[in-house]
Image 1: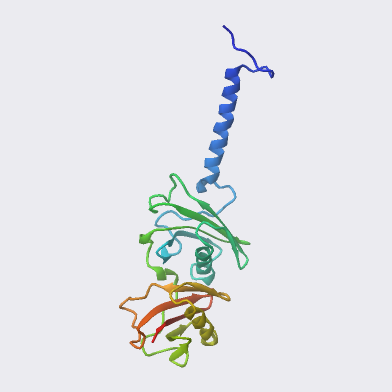
Image 2: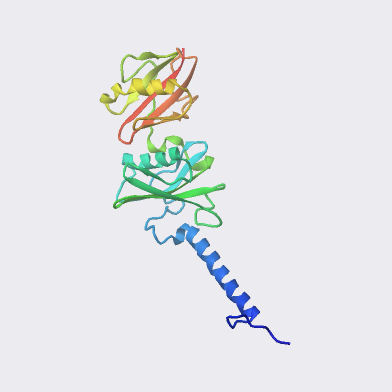
Length: 250
């Protein structure tokens, strides 16, 4: 009995062995490429669990962020919060460009140093703008922390407003308890309130502002005017500029 050689001079067993090696190398390369700890193109990785450079948090019940790492930028910079918010708006797991930043994202699978933190599927983000870099993980996890960790502005107290009039009508709705982090922003509040009134209770983008339906809704620590029968709290952020208000039916 003998083994028949192929036209290239290999026996059938040798040929199968070579194919097996090629397949093994290909699969290994795929796993290594998709393991964030092995990405050669990213000098900054998300931090180890518990070593975050910015607090963990949620932007809504379906989007949590954690293990934020920073390079040449501080957590107090509005840019840091704006990038995380932009990834939420573009959709989890979607790469994007935002104000000069380019963000790539990879779906995690299998065992990583962050797996024990996340309940299920999550994504690693790598964002860079010249020498400034941000890396973090994002996905669905209810225990990531309070939503306001990045300092989204809260509405003013009941009966107060940083922009006059205190109580304003827009369409069939009214807004009140306006807060701004810059008095000049009072000029943009009517436009943001109108955009919110078009579909109350839904997040939206207006110009440079990302506007969130803030989970302070129903929070007993936030005093809501009794003149509104039902309401939603909005926090709008364009990076350095922030606006918050309450809007609802009269």
